[in-house]
Length: 237
Image (cartoon, rainbow, N blue to C red):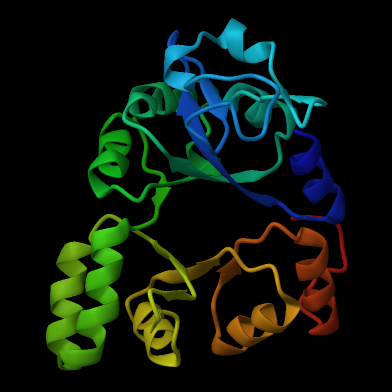
């Protein structure tokens, strides 16, 4: 929560996070499957209770936040939520319903099956981002198919998404190119690129016209946007 609060204090209103669910059904805001790497605790989150996790400290200082902590603790922010495991499908959907946070959430996952499973459990639509397979198809087919056939194909593949969240490159392949951004925008999709921590790369991607950057260095991105005259000068909207 300290990191999220720091981003909000800088002026950000969009936060990206991952979720895992404990053995007793509590949704945690946490990237790893286990506590071992970044906390003084140990064990798979799916095998631990929320009480077990509550005894662990991130970096020996901070508790592992729950999704409820994030939604209620920072009520003005929008959340980009990556569903990391199948156990989190029902628990995340229930949490979104409980807080009526549909308008604040974008649901994403590397697995389209997992992402769609969350969407099916919700009473109102939420924004969503495509998984690995549709993004790969978009990247490859966009370079080889005629425009009308490409758009016809991808409208069927991407019928339930509003965003493409992608790495700038993958396995030596340049994913985010001028053509990629142009094709996405032509279909009404926004492009978010992860995880960009170098100012020069931030500038390059913004020059290509991407709509958002995921970064660990919110301070550097703010400085880049300020230099470009793209950082809001008034209070957050």
